[in-house]
Image (cartoon, rainbow, N blue to C red; front, side, top):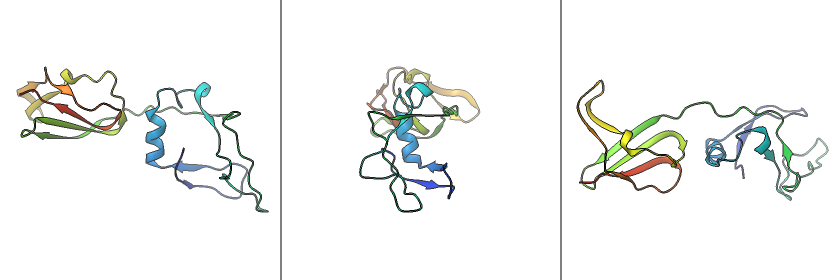
Length: 147
């Protein structure tokens, strides 16, 4: 269910709006949703009209058993990036925060290197035996560093 958004046009048969970040993150969290035209449909909840016409008539709901297929779809082609990280050496936890929600499947802890400066790897440690604590997709993942 989409939660909110901003209407960007008025007095037309076509409405363009902006999705909230929360709604975008939910759309991207499902592997088989909004990845191609064949798996992108829209329905509306009965009793909660999308909009009314100029005479106050509710727009007829679109049933989830007869959902409307998308006309045009631009898939997400923007790569997420590591936005920040926290390192807790008291509890041996490394927390990684990404720019957008990412999938936990295929997460490779051994690709992570902690180094002493931003532009060299002279003094560094590559994670080897650490393991992922987080169990679901999201923005932030916690890794247990094996002492």
